[in-house]
Amino acid sequence: MHAPAEPPTQADPSTNVRSVVSLLIAVHLLAVGIALLCSVQRSVLQTRLSAVLAPYARTLYFVPHENPFLYTYGNTRLGDNDDDDHIVQIDIPANPKTGSAATTVEFPAPGSNWSPNRQRAFELTHRLGWYAEQDADDQLGVLMQEIAWQPMKQYGVDEVEVHCIRRMTQPFSLDDLPADFPRDNPASPKYERDLYSAQIYLVDGQLQVAKKSASREVAPRAKNSGGADGQ
Amino acid sequence: MASSVAVESPAASGPGWNEFWFQSADSRPLAAVRIAAGLTLLVYAASWGNAAQWLATEGILPVQATHSILDYFDHITAFRGFSLLGDSPAVIVSMQIVIAVAGCFLALGCFSRISAILAWFAFLWFAHRASLVTGTVEPILATILFYLAWSPSGDYWSVDAWRKNKGTRATTVQGLSRAWWLPGPVVANIAIKLLQIHLALLVLSMAEAKLTSPAWWDGEAVWYLTASTLSRPLDLTFLRPMPLIINAWTHAIVLVEVLFPALVWFPRLRCPVLAVASVVWLSLPLLTGEWMFPLAMSAALLAFVPAAWLSAKPVK
Image 1: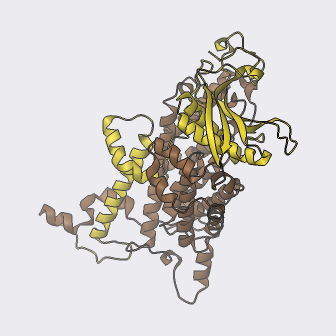
Image 2: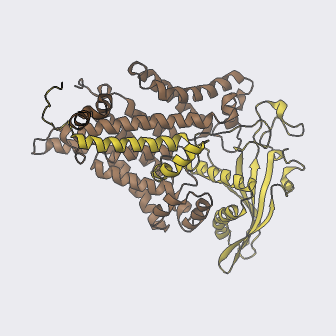
Image 3: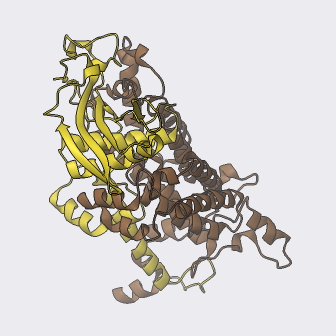
């Protein structure tokens, strides 16, 4: 037995409207839920659902390509922490035309770590470090030449050497720190490792990259006061 | 018989469902979100400085370079569409200005719906173009703007409402915004509820990500953030002799993100949950330097604030 139906009012959308809206809500929430909660590890079912629904959430940027909320994976073994800081050093040769001396430019440029642009630059160098570890030389080369291009223009040089440097994070327990690493100076060059070196040069208006070495092939740079690869 | 009930009665899909989604709601929380999101958007646009140095042809991340990276990781689909406008400095700076101006209009509630749609599109374009260097702020702002783009967020505390109230037509404020074939207050309710659920899922995904990492389990994650000598905003390594503080800080972040999605729905717990979560998220920039994250989260969390708290008069 139903109560007599009330005439529809402005605040009482029709059944058809409710049905359509309900369907949209359900699909939207399913897509969002799958995209957000299956971004780390996935079962086969989640992978299949993601393949269908994630493009919607990705296009609307509800989820970025990588989950940025992890912040740190953390690893007590020195050099194994994927979240170590990375910088790019660009060795600029002397330029006889302009009279400028040889110098080294860093990316990110020195500045306050409260600056969002510096944080973005660290995001990029962190990515570079990951590519270097994965030997993804094509991607690394593309980004390295884009980073090197502005200093090359600024200093008027046609050739520079670039290095992707990892600054290893001192573990929480100093007992986990190898004996030859300074305990009282976590910013010591001893904590730095050259993951990737390349020569970038301008030929016929086009930038070319010639890889010199990768992390597993390279000896520590001269400034690293010798011998440490962090392992 | 059953089918006739299903057709005739709005309760066909369940009275709980209808009550939850299709009741009228006061849109003050959306107005609060709109103002905070507009201001955050303004700050976000300014935070790029000269964005052309990053995203233009001669910048660090021109379309071609970004394209080749995303293509490698099969993340290219969305980017393709958003890169159609190209990467000339004029386009990049124009988009940055659109975000700033739309953020300003959004905060003021001036042409709220149009401002929200414009801000949403420009922000999406920017986020996709800069997707190699985006952080924690972009997914939060993208989420908020998506819901503001189609909800009646300009019904209160806005230039739109002020203009309508001064107008000759006797229009009630509640009747300002009608989205297609649904009454404004119902749309407001749907938008608020969806934003709330979406945020709860987002916070849960934050917890899920952290729980994959040993550092967040063993309480040392805060240490690793502050021990990153190049990127940390503050040197808090003096905490090393105080492991309990580092552990407590780490566990508090995870605990809040695990419990928030479950507890925020209880009316009595909502105020303390929002307060504790805000404090914990405010502490994160001390470790990461990402001060826009609590700003964006605060804007989003306003969706959980009951309309009665935002109203001078009791809301019916």
